Image (cartoon, rainbow, N blue to C red; front, side):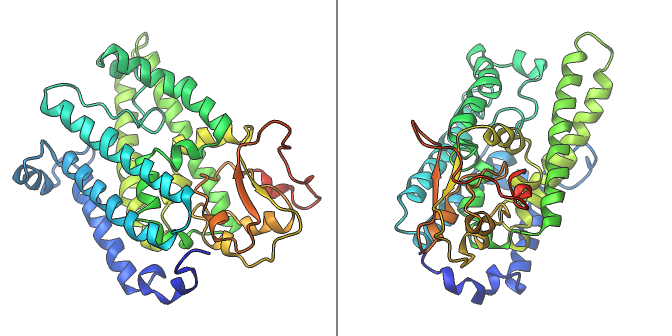
Length: 364
């Protein structure tokens, strides 16, 4: 069992106490200072971070943000691995997340910028990086980079999601997930497990995905039709309300109040599209039959708000599209009832038939 599991509820910073509200306010303020200056709807907002970036010899406030982001991930990874020590899965997964952040998401773009080349963030592809399939964006890249972004978005990542589940990206590569798994780990238990939250999740998540799809279609059609102004307006609205306020201000600022995967659960279009593929793929959380003692550890520590215990008690494998495969439910289970798997030769894809009254657990 994970270290510190039983004393979580005695720590005010992890239970929406006064310190948690202070941390939430500080995170929210930082993201407002980052995104609002020069944005599409708030161009006159004062910029206080660019001078700070210049003072520490970084090219822009975005590299300052990347540096702070990396520090938070490293600083969060140390206590996270201490709490969950004994799990090789979490050790390797965290090492990969840190490697991707420090190389592909920070050092490589910084090196390209300092040498006068276009910045490339190879770990962020469409639809998370919503403009990576825009004709104008692709035409301004090196040919190899353009091929990578098209291949990853349309072929590579979908195939990986079908074979291994969305965990290959959401819990092993993505910087948003990386911050949630390290710095955000103390608040993972705060995710709302209610049916109302699940219904809201499906509405907001697929609304954002629909917006990205519509924006991409607009950009393509604008090559032949006079839709450039409309596309620019839609792009500005999406960038401000989704890219800045939702994913940053709310997505990270609400860690101490709503859990560490607010953006991943309620807004990320990449999580949405990979989750749909995962639902029909091979990944699942396998459940040992008739072994669950209903302790609730798995559900409590699910950062995506899934009531894993309900599946285990019903002897049903977990195949929810929202599952990011972090493995925490299996880690905290005292009886080893849960196991992450992507199947194999001769291995069934479901542990038990769906029983009457339980079908609704397996739809989202």
